[in-house]
Length: 287
Image (cartoon, rainbow, N blue to C red; front, side, top):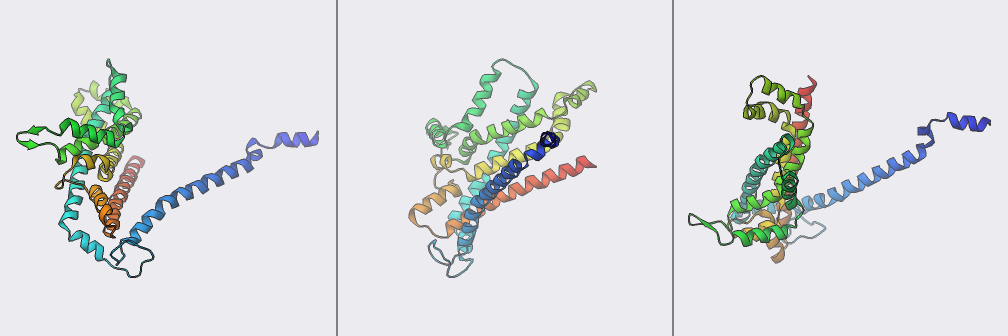
């Protein structure tokens, strides 16, 4: 009976401690595995970009910045990088504006056909890129506006990339709008604030972290998208991922590693900007 009494006095957390330690160890091991799985290919690519050889091979015999100079000195590769940045910025703008407005409408108002429209907005996010790219190419392949061919233009690629980026912005912003204090919005209306002014001066500043994060995610999605760009670009508007794929079919030079490092750097820069903006907002709210 004494043993039973002692067993009853042991807290449940203590009795589960071995299982908790095992679960923590498994979670830590899985996290380390994921970090290594992501970091190792990136580090190898970064290392190969300093290879002096004419082909990608390991181990590296001579280190050099040769292929960085070659990349920056090639009009074709620099133009492809410029196309990627222009298209990504355009996609970010279109997706952010459309996604934020759509999320606010869905959060604020009730209207007929709401569920069907929600499904229509989210559907492209789950569609294969090859389906969307081919569909857009077929739909707009012969379209001309004022004598300007839409197919092969950067604008068409921006709109196609927005089919993926806008639903993501919409999803993130819808969750963000749900956590704001709507009593502030109602107070603005009661004090005579018009809906448009309230939206820009009250709502948007309170969700600025979500907007910045969503916009940068849209930028990254467009910058790295390949399949739709392959269907919709021509030689003058091809993006960097498309040129990398075409070059890989002919010759696997370390120039590809340089291009991969540049794309990865843009992703890391976006993540750093999101983190810095989040820290800035935390400091503002803690004052």
